[in-house]
Length: 203
Image (cartoon, rainbow, N blue to C red):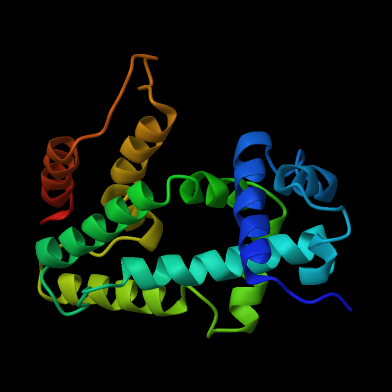
């Protein structure tokens, strides 16, 4: 059995993300991955059973990293504006540091893998995002109890609280706005939008 090489394994993971973002999951093959990494077609199988195994492990690993980042300094008992500001800051910084990962997760969410991961989360509560989700639900519950926001379905809260940020980040990553004009996201844009989001959520 061939020995595992950490540098080679990291290169395989990085190139896999790049290919999936650029060509989509349907365009991702082990042959393309091997060619991009300048390795033999058999080398990825030293680290993964097959393409599905690679993708599943990649999502879990990167998901755990993302959860750690977005939870940094987040206190579920903080006020609406304080807690949401930490979440926006963490998500904004994470996206800027890891520009390929948001489009990578979008590819996963729009594929058959999303159902697979939903089942895995339900079967294994300790998997990534569980701590984040628990903290966020507690945060929302606290803000409702204090009368800062009205009680609404989680999906509505999420759409108001975070969709504006992710829309701006998507424009930034694409380098153009919805009108097709060049677009570069600035801190001022982020925090102007944040203020409007807080106003929209508050009672």
